[in-house]
Length: 213
Image 1 (cartoon, rainbow, N blue to C red):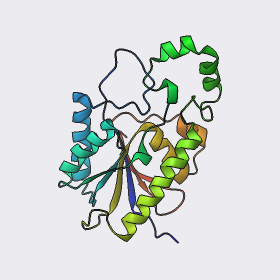
Image 2 (image 1 turned 45 degrees about the horizontal axis):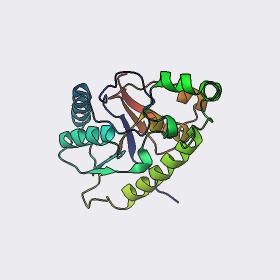
Image 3 (image 1 turned 90 degrees about the vertical axis):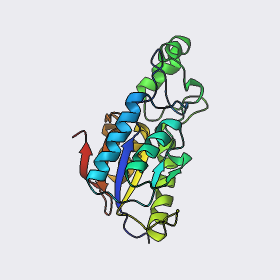
Image 4 (image 1 turned 180 degrees about the horizontal axis):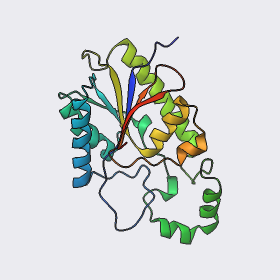
């Protein structure tokens, strides 16, 4: 049986560099904007102010999350960042990185079908939300066990597990760890640089704090 999990802190990456138009930003790799770096610094300062102790910061290996994690890690005493592809955003397949208006114009039927069943529709070559949830939860179970057994970096353990990732990943973990209606979870909005801290030692997990409130 797994031992109780530590406090879980979910961080959405800072604002990425903006495209000239609205795109499907799944696993397309873009760096942080200057505002995004400021958001990441603010998260690190907030966690440090709250006395959060960690052995490392886990992060999606996509640049916008990894860079956010690196900035946070500095403010938590220079702890290592551990990239993990399990925590990548939803793979949008053939549409990833494409302008939304272009996809809507070229593939009106597929676009409409996605709108009718947002949770289960799978873009060609990509994932749907059940796929994302399975992938994310596999990674979460693994690092939870590692955190309880021995920190992967050999550092002294902390009292929290920090994961810096993406909106879809946060939704997937909330769907797994809480008893909230799944459709309602996928409609939640977490702005870039948002923090959600959970007591995940029992089901359903309870919110400890969140920023912005």
